[in-house]
Length: 276
Image (cartoon, rainbow, N blue to C red; front, top):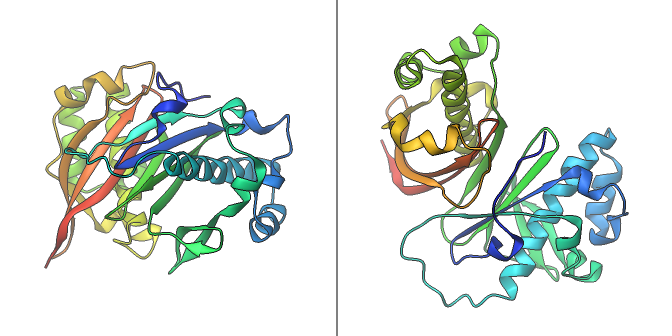
């Protein structure tokens, strides 16, 4: 199932956080391995399946495209209010840059987290990846670390809700859904994307620790309504601040959410230090 957008590739660049999505089916008709560095090509060839290769490649190409687009954009513009931009890419959009230029942008690992290098030199941008079904997303941001997560909405087994969410989180989802099972699934998926994003920010060491954290200060359904019943995802992000709590630790984070009834995309970055 594809993720529909009402944005265009030209909106992929901003002075803050840029997000792009690419469906792996867009890559079926061409060989994009010449868009990868030597080390990236080796990683790609060692992936276990064609589906995984497609997801991985779509994410890397999205990040490379965003970086190259930012090079063409003046970095002098100041953004007064933090909000990401989202763009849906296609095989045609990828042709804006030559394979050689894509090769020069390399996704590397720094301290266990993905980073970027340009022409062999490390870059300061924060990069994050996520995928769901056939859609892969990448983000690039300057300044504070930024993480993204993309998830497909839907019902899950009861154990998932018991073992993943706190009592307060389950009460919030039930209250805001007001008896509507579809809404409840959407709100629980939203919580899941926020916990996954917090994990990518380095808040926890393992996916198995997600039940230990709680998302507090969540907005009401009226602030999220245009998203959960929408048919297209675009740049109309709902932006709000929440607290990520683990025992005595509290981290304030900014969250930007867009999506449809079927998909939720969450972008998160810290808005302050950790309070102990």
